[in-house]
Length: 456
Image (tube, rainbow, N blue to C red; front, top):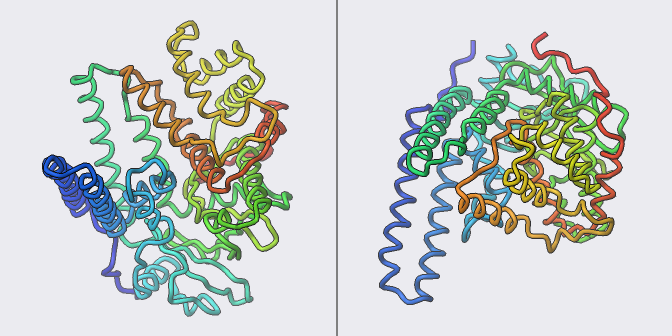
């Protein structure tokens, strides 16, 4: 019988302690810096500020890698938008995109034996002792099935479930405190982060449920069946369990590397496939792979787009997809009344006749419809989506007013901003309006697949 692994993700008490220490250290660094900066000249202040940013970025990245779990996922999300971060934060946090420190092979071996009832040496023809990739909640090893099929085996860390549960309790508590604080101090009842916390909680819980991940992968595999430009790796259920999941191995380069390719046409083909994959999921299945981490995409040697890691897949109700499609189409055609109707139906405005609410949502719609208004090439290399986001945030903070939270839009926004980042990295110059119009022009016509209830 396999022994219980000693190595595991730190528990809630240690996570709370270390994140508290981290917050204190970073705050003290900036507070102390402000005091000492008064004694420096302008050039000295700039150098000192850059040094503090670098030191604190390293502190944050180091703690996130140590604690793994949801905290590291937050760091990965922030690193996707490096340009929005001060100083050296972006580049330092980007180290979280590639890998975390892997756990020892012996730990992984024990998890597999406890989960599948046999060791990797017994189950596979060969199994690499070195991790192919290590992430926030688990790591991946290359292996070969007995019949010669190359596979990737994803193994969950011991303590991962407890780390997520602990972080989620802290997050929900924090969201409730922020809501009360803002209501009391700022006098703003609408600034409520609890829907965000609830949506994140739902999907983080999914990410530790490998049965749900297998369900998601098989769902997207069925959706993309017959589409020769996208590859969803097959799940090998015989070699998968509660804490282990085995996929076909996909060769190729990850998205981050693909976007560095010197060939402009190659990069723009990647952008087109990303955009088409997004709209195909939304308008053919009403679903969305909602974790736009560059390591979750592979560009295969033949140019096809491979999608990996299905722990975060959002399934939308049909009313939302119908309203979302109508909203995008109305924005593209200049149908102001149709746009108002769609925003009201989606709950993005609470009063269709409120001019201020409509103006606020108009600002947001303008930002998220970059490149969709004119039938001409749009240059993502010169479009500053980061500056636009900062201007939006500044506007709403100054007005002490925020749009209502809409849970379905939370992960949608995460994906769209991730794609903006990748389109900008690709320095793409494409007719984005035509790329999107071919998907939305016929409206929502229902799901192309049946989505069975999970667990049945």
